[in-house]
Amino acid sequence: AEESTQSTWEAVVSTQSTWAIAWKRPQFIIMDEPTNHLDAETIEALITALKGYQGGVLIVSHDQYFLQNVVTSYWALDAGGIHHITGVKEAKNFWGNQAVQRSEEVGQKQKK
Image (cartoon, rainbow, N blue to C red; front, side, top):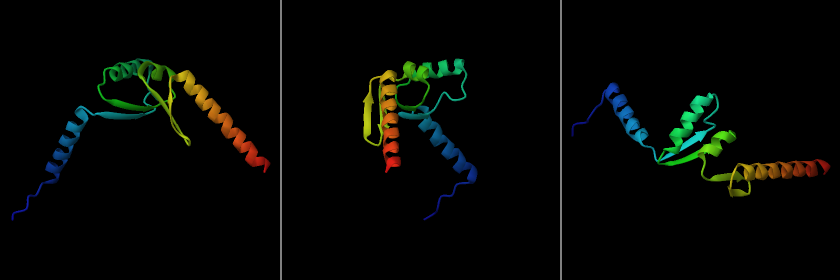
């Protein structure tokens, strides 16, 4: 049987073609702090693009304006599991309560 060999160039082109096809219409996007280092105009363009996106998006961000304009469902992850949050205000309350609980735990451990 004759083995098929590809030149390095052919392998690169093949790999790039595969990525081009995969990235043409991704089903799911993960974004970690996507607005960091973006100006206001670019953030608005990103918001517009995401509103028109037809797939799933997981966003980790502290940018409240961005989240309020893009997100349709909030979820918080902590040691106790995954929690559905109804909005930015509830998220602040959730994480604020978590911070209070953690400081109380640290204080109790320091007393021992």
